[in-house]
Length: 517
Image (cartoon, rainbow, N blue to C red; front, side, top):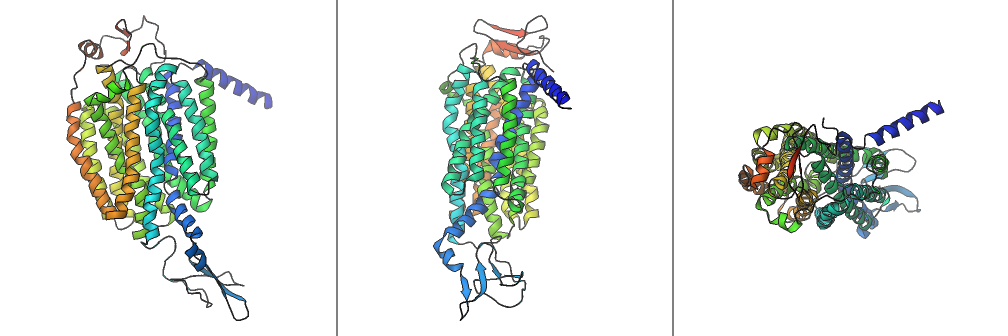
């Protein structure tokens, strides 16, 4: 049996090496990388607010003084009051009494009104959690925002394989730090470190797909699949984190993610061989020139403001639920499940449909739907009332992302040199700006004027931005590139560009990638 297993593993490794040039395998690797990155991004959403609240509660001197051991005249302990779950434990009995305050009781266990950590009062400590959690969540996107302008040009010089593998290594380290960190400072460092790894993975991954899938329709489908991996990570992350945190502990979900990351790293090492430097054959348009392109700015703005809505929800919605709905720990993550499922559905449907109906129109409708949905979120009075608005938020963001990500590559093909590292660095900067400004500003606004007004503000901003997508309906481009992109005589419909000219890869050519399915 051992020899048979060894033979099967050998055949698997041989197949992986032979299929190195397969576009489908590259798409799978990028999708898995985005899946794990976004699982780590969202698995902390239900864990961190509750964990930091209890951490502050246990380290606060006032709480420590109130968590007292009540003694009788002879010094015997009659009851023990715990502020962690606000229960009263009676010696010599397994009975536990839920206390409405801090007054101990020695009577038989009776169920009293809920005032546990599941339903904390809107005190200054809870309001302060909005800012702390928001800053911690925003740290990843802020670091990623700073790193992206360096990663984009770097991929043009050394290729995509090395940066995406470096991203895996950094993400693995960040995951281990999350598992064993027990202070706000270490959690903040782990979240910030994840930003560097995410920058490498997302920029290099999207650029790799755009360089392999050069036909606009094929590229849209491929990026839709990759965003499906991202959506699956967003889908699985919050409920996975909340359930594991509730029933196993904080460390378990991060250790599982670290194990899955090792699988992806091994696959990258075998298939991509990230020891080779493979620079682009032509010099791409500079990052500054791309940032001055108004059409790229509009597409990036749609990505930024669309994702800013969910970014503001992540740190503030769990705290609002704890305050107004007395939600349990597992509910804090499950509340995001409708948004995650609908995002997965939206990216799958509109990765194909957006090319037919017009990506500009798809993004415009998505932005309006995002705005309406987030305005409806504070109207919910229980967790069931959050299902419809959160579903709308996720579905609409799926429409925007699946439309704007492919259009970024198309705009480069149409108006600039077809080298994609820098333009997807801009797309990732826009994504990160939403997730950097969203939690940091959102936490402060929620503390100052309340959660409902926060949702109203971001909803109105999204609706007002939507009409700008009309400009992406028919963007002008270089005449020779317009002719090439609209040419349907190429048998493979695959365009490649060089500094000497532009040509189509057909049956009589020797394409770099031989799998066009």
